Image (tube, rainbow, N blue to C red; front, side, top):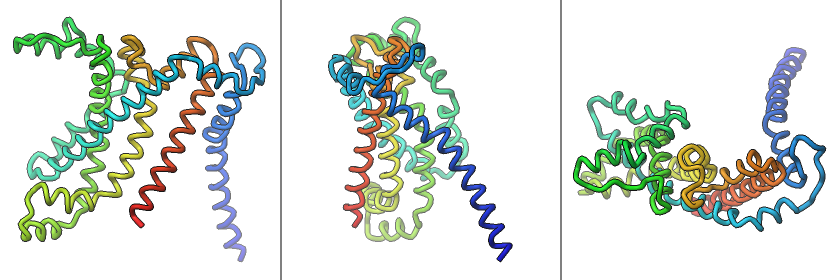
Length: 289
């Protein structure tokens, strides 16, 4: 009995330490952020309760709608490239029989680069003058493109950078899921006369469905919070075509010294992502039932 009580006390001790860490570093900042959304705060003067004024200021800002529209566009484009490309790349890597470790390392290398460094490298590559991409195009006799200097190409250019930088992690997760598929399923499909595409659709996709659904959710949540690429590479330009929600939040906090409105915007983003996550889980659970 005494030994059991001692074991329980030890377990409660470890649990208490974890709860304290969560309370200090996760729950308190979250609760503090919600309170700041209803206050006028500049961290110089005493905070004042202003109710819904911060939200009204946001809705009156013409950049508010632009930031949400740009963020939605970035998320949609990132899903097209960042969701399909790593999966297809993992399928190809899974079929390789030689130099598999080498190719996995090559795919994962961009993840090891700090995001700011990767953005600066791509900013140089996109440079319309000595940049690598336009130099290559001119070498082929083609005209260079205004990658980051045109509102028509700037967002797509940022999506390419984000996809390249995060390609490795998703690819390795897909690859691990693919290697857990029993080989007998592919052999049975081949005996039934299934080609590559039919094996991919009827065997690979159903067997990796759970991983695909989880990564889709995580990717939407992550891309809705894009900040580094537009901040480092375009500063929201040209013509506000790459102003995202987090970049607008940063401007309110550190350009205008209005931390209350910045917190209100972060609260809106939290509500949108929470509602999307709840809806996504509900729909996927119904589909699996």
